[in-house]
Image (tube, helix red, strand yellow):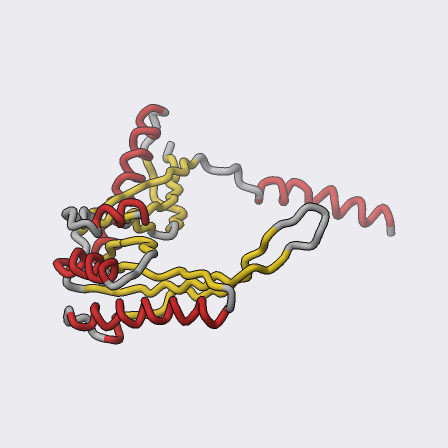
Length: 229
């Protein structure tokens, strides 16, 4: 029985060896594409922070400031559904003492509100208005696209073209014809938005001009091409 098994293995080994194909040469490249678009939406984030001995008093100060700021923004024609609470916090304030437990000496309340604007001409007036109303936090300004599908598709087309150009250059340097595509992988598209930090927003609140710039949409693909003989 053992001799029969060995005989069968000896007969099958050449068949298995011929069935295994040698790996065919290929080239794997990364293609990148980028498209710019004019932003048509902005988000301003402002807020208030206050400290008092009692938690309720600190929160009351914040509420009073933000109620006035929101009312002033609404008078500019901004609808209520364009405003949304972004963050809300209430934390104890400690006094650290040598060799003793920290002592709570008060409470700090903070709330921020995000305003979404589709009329970019309102960005400057909104910032000026909330600061004049008592807001003491400006957490950022970002410009975006309401619909970036067209930019994403064009960025992908450019990424594919970039990948093929790289593959053709590699194949030519190896003196091999470029063959068909055998694998395509799309990486997640990226969006690079113009942003204004809190420090720069303080300057914007003084009436300085605000420029929206452009939104950059990027895409990348990995493509494997076969190299022909």
